[in-house]
Image 1 (cartoon, rainbow over the protein chains, first blue to last red):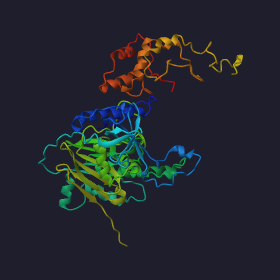
Image 2: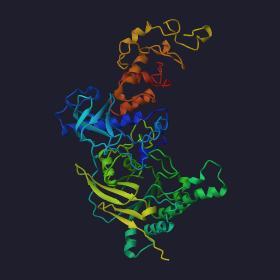
Image 3: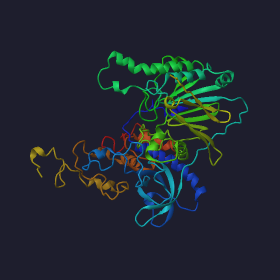
Image 4: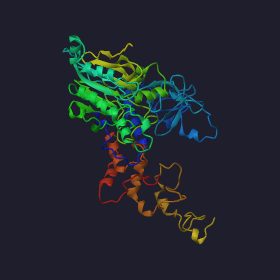
Length: 421
Length: 123
């Protein structure tokens, strides 16, 4: 169901990013208008230009966060060098960040304690209840987000357990990845490891999904000069190794592979499927599927939606939360997978749709290449139930995740090797 | 200042309204509905045109005016970088009911209208 993420049919005609912001505003604003009667029906809705001082009303628009520490290309040209302190590239949040609301008619500064700038990012579409102050700013009293989308009901499954294995960050070819660990994973999935009980569990695995960052290409070799033939083979070694592992899995189980930040795919989201020529062995099997990032698919009526981590990593840079799962919950409540695209996250300039708008609520929402494993159940106001999963990098933790389709329970598969000397 | 004979073609704007710069009399007809350009009296004031063609009268008939109003209407989103027919189709699929006469103007082969928006090739 990834057609919405594919850009093969798109033709660049000179459009700018204003088009995708317009569509996002239109889609979410239409949604919010339908929610307003249940929220605060007595208040009028107006546009930013139609604000009157002192009149309480509701405005809907896109948020823009003005960040002091956000790196801009213009600071290279400013007369005063190093006006901004050398910050760590991890997080650009500052206490002085301000939020601005924008719609087609204009912008207005937002004041008040209700809207915390460290939670929201540029690109969120929200409704605000408040009034215009004497200084021309908008004092916010309450916020309404789009909320979780509607979810298709899961039929009650009384049958047997079926598992989906989610793994990411294999990083084949990097110094941190251990081929023995990966081989253990492959052997376990294909049922060559363990006693009868383990093998029975492995036999119930119905799908494997590799969520990004599967190879680590040595960028040092790509320094602009012609590659010597031995360097050429060094460059393609990791992919060949990965193909061998994937062929072993594809021979028995359907496997989906998604591109990640380090993979040989395009940079801007939505990343297009990895080319099949990279996997001569595995693509011979019809169980092998190369998919886009983000990836939306159904396994036995259970809807999965996931990314290789770029959307959440970007949110981590420009906002604050307690953990990865909280960021994931926010993206679902904002009904948008990547609100920071195209501001700080590379994105294709769509003109007719915003593919990151979440139409229907998934049952399992996963994000790959995170630092550690975490999971919880998110319950929505209309009875939606979502399993949020943060998949850790396999090359660093040796952990993959198994989801039981019957009851959405989640557990880990950890592989450790200790070679004592 | 230097409007000597050989510089005439280079600087297209002259100090007084004469000759090359646009005759403002014919502009007064289309003054009526220019809601998009806030406060401007003429739709296209004589500007320093350093490159590109001058806006000649052939482009400015009633059909083009209707299409330009469609371009400027913010309800249907920004018009830069999109063909008019694509923008119309997008507005239609988003449920905004764009006007049918615009669609007829854009799809009929009889009228010669510009497929690109107002800013096509100018921005």
